[in-house]
Structures are given as structure tokens and as C-alpha cells.
Image: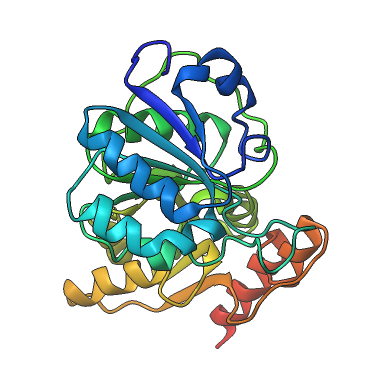
Length: 290
């Protein structure tokens, strides 16, 4: 994207290596800015550059954007500026522990007007969503987990995704699993054993309300799965959508619990909070038994 548009600038608050900005810094040093551990300044700086016609991309850990919440609202969102937030370390991060877990971004960001919020399911979708966000012309955030993706093929050409549209990835019966971001893989694995429908929701805001209502009408149980706080997160957006449409359906919300998750191997931590295949199966089967 930087090669195609000279207005693109990269900003990071001392997270060049962690956010994968080394190559960008080397190839475009005049368009790379490391502001040090000053998250508020990073966001306000991006807003100022945007006002002057630049297209800033702020590469920042999910948990550290919390420090610049006021600047995000007042300096970017109110002015509806085209700033892209690349939110690394969304969800559980493992060894860095509770201070670095990106547990709250979905709940914090989806309530902000003018902001588009995306959650890619794999590395290719992440790439396409960053391109989508860059072309949008309004504030946008793409949240993705630490480390590698599930290993899908990367499509070389960039293509913007339709805003606010999810996709059906598996058709089943009785149960519909609405997976947000990194939870698509375990959701799909569980669905194959349950014979359930799976939707890759892609967008937390705007939510694909048409798809949500379709799934509610066609299934007996909806299950929302997210690697973020259950309280106020993507599942809450689904429940709000159904309530507004006066659609009553049983909903099971699965995500990070109302406590701080400490250090550990990421896979083990996901298993501990029930966000792997066995955990999803156990929760869904328990709900069906009631």
C-alpha cells in the first residue's frame, strides 16, 4: 500500500519490532515515525497528519490504545478523519500476561461513532482488511492476534471487502456459530462435530445485521464466539441487534471471562477459558442439555 500511495505514513509508539514495522521503516524512513512510549501523542499526531492530507496508519498494541482513548474519540472520531489503527496483540498474548492481553478493544471501540471495526479470521483476511480500512476514508480499526495465523494462502492482489458484510462458511442445522476474528478456526472445528452453521462475521461495527437476523430465524440457538471480553463485546452487539428487531432466540455468548488472564502458553490459556475446540463443544452441549 505504501508503494501505491505516497500519502501513507506509519506511526508506532515504540513498537517497531513488535508490530512488524521494521521493513516499512527501512524502505520508507521519511514516512515512518516512532514517537516513543507516548500513545496519546501517536494518535493526536496521526490526526494532525490526516488533517494535512496524509493517510496515517497507527500500529499499536490493543492494550496500549486504551491509553489514548480520549485522543481517539476527540481528535480522530469526532472529526471523522481517515486514520487506520492496526491493533496488534488483540486477544490473549501468552507470555506478556495480563497487562498486554487485548481483551477490551471490541467493547471499547464499537461504541465510538464513525469508527469501523474489523476482526480478520486469518492472515489473508487481515491483509485485505488493512487495505479496506486504508481505502475507507474514515476512522477504522483492524484487530488481530499476536503471532502467526492458521496458515491460509495469501492472495497477492489487494481487494477491499464490502463494509459490514460477513460470510457463511458452513451450513448446518439447529445451531449457528457466529465467529469473530481468530475464533473462526475453533468454531469451524466444533461445528463439524455438531453439524452447526458457521458464519465468519468479519465486522464488529457495522455488524452484518441482515446475516444475524437470517441466522436467528433459521436456527434454534445462536452462539457468539470472540477472543475478547464477553461483557460489551461483539456478542453483545448481536444481542442488541436481535432485541432491536424484536427477535427472541436463545444466545450463548463465549469469550474472555470477567477476570484478568495471567501469563502462560497462548494455547493453554485459550483452553483454560474455553475458547478451543473442546471448550466450545463443552459449552454448547451444556447449553443444549438445559
